[in-house]
Image 1 (cartoon, rainbow, N blue to C red):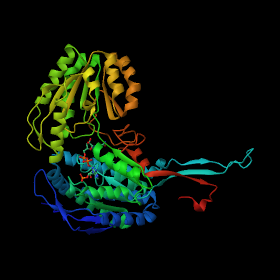
Image 2: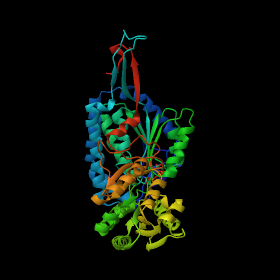
Image 3: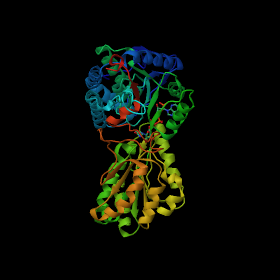
Image 4: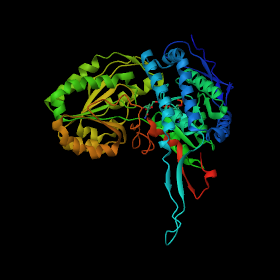
Length: 501
Ligand code: NAP
């Protein structure tokens, strides 16, 4: 093997072993032992991050951009080893890991470019008006400043792009905030090699070693300790609703509550409007099957629900989806726990009265096959469980009697990362009726596409009202995500010598 993990934490530039270890549970290849994180490790990492802030928080944008580019280079220098351990740990195919690595280094470099432009600082200046009556106006300047040490939690399904040096870490470092990563126990070796790349970049750029630490998991106490540490000033989290909510509550209960930016799950409904259904329902069904099964359905943007008009064309859609999904074989899921959660989610849906099986197969332990169910809009509206995320390749088709029922479904939705409209020109009026509702529900609205595949760009919003995320004003993907780790400071009548450079 190109890379043999040593299983230690990286704390302020030192690789440190703990007292106890846990074993990784790879989909294939050898398991390795990793140190279990302790509260003392959390304390050491947070104290070093605070110490590092006094220099790193005041580095120039050019220096931070150079650091980000160096991290991307160091990740690329370990490309093959990252793919090897990443595929072993997650069971994801090589091509997926390679693509995700490109996305990860691409977003790190995008942040380097973004901070060099400077407009993220959103500087404002109200000139002094000394002669204004009845009162003079002072000189007011405003700029965004980094908030301090950030805790980052990645998700199992994106071992690179939403993990150790993923979007949250890149955004925080770009802002000038040191990062303490709580490693994901589903991919600790991938976490270790990425931490090695960040560590090499810190040394090459001569930065304070406390700028980045990785504490391996192995127990839940370590995550709780990180978010409760008084020196942590905000948390970036990607993962499940249950985990995110537990940590969000801990942040809110702190003596000094801090923002918790949780990017959670979603069912990403697709509304297939009548003309699109009539003209190309079969094609949409085939496209849906591809999106639903991509990565064994383990995407937060997985489109789990399709809403169609009941009737002959709706039946044709059900048949086409059944046929297209039936053609997909079993895929390995990320962990045994996720595979068993998929099975219990499937049973939860199947047991609801009025839900019919369209496609059911037998899953074998960690291997998942697609499931397809159907129900009526009236039944869907009565059963909240049908609106909950099942993490995996499971689809539900909801047949609506008319446009009013579609509207009711839209109104009853919880917050979503995405909502999709499949529409032809002749559906414009129906789509216009849905739009005000969908805008209140989702962070991103798509037409005639599938929500899996999130572009990393300036205009991207990857977030949404709860439970899609815990902060509807934020995004975890794209350049605007840096705003989560900044806060505005106003400087009133301060001499230039005291202003930030
Ligand atoms: P997860 O089980 O919630 O784990 C995420 C991280 O949180 C892990 O480090 C985990 O620790 C920790 N954690 C979870 N519950 C905790 C608790 N009660 N106390 C302390 N730490 C806790 O999520 P996952 O299975 O990795 O990811 C799959 C989920 O993420 C899906 O629901 C998916 O939709 C969502 N997701 C969302 C996005 C998005 O951008 N919105 C992107 C990708 C995935 P351990 O290491 O100990 O497990």
